[in-house]
Length: 190
Image 1 (cartoon, one colour):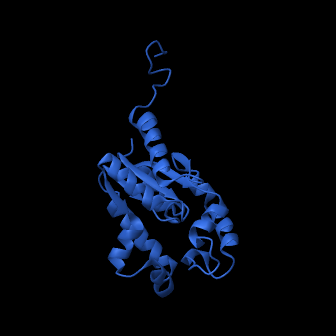
Image 2 (cartoon, helix red, strand yellow):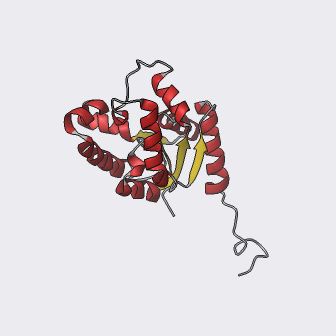
Image 3 (cartoon, one colour):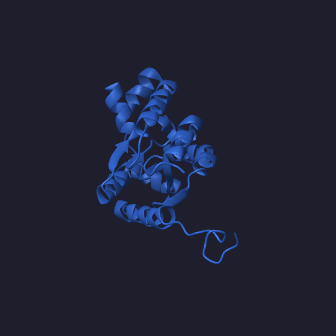
């Protein structure tokens, strides 16, 4: 049985950090954000880690921050967009709590990242080309990893509060109070 952490994974701009803070506030849990922990430890923003040190250094920092934040329970942990695609990081997250993958359509993600402006700053993993094309490529590359999450929660056309409510409804009904299997229910076979 995993620890009682609520863990949010999924692609960039699906709302993990914002929703995580809402869930933490509603449940009295501690909010922990892996990307924020990396920035705190590195003392520089993520785009500079990528440009100055490279993705491999960033992923090592991400792994260490994940191991540290997943130690103990009663947290809401928000992971970066690519964290769950890394096998060791994914295993630690899966063993540390119930994992919810926040999903959105590529067009929704693109709009959230650019806020509808073609001149908006682009995130490190999107590179210099067409961000929407790269979003689609990364979503395809990460699909198998994201399928390992315990639950998927769509965020398109949802406010962060609605997403938080949906996650808490699932958590309270299926994780905290799971339905007994036929073998466990009264009158079920032994």
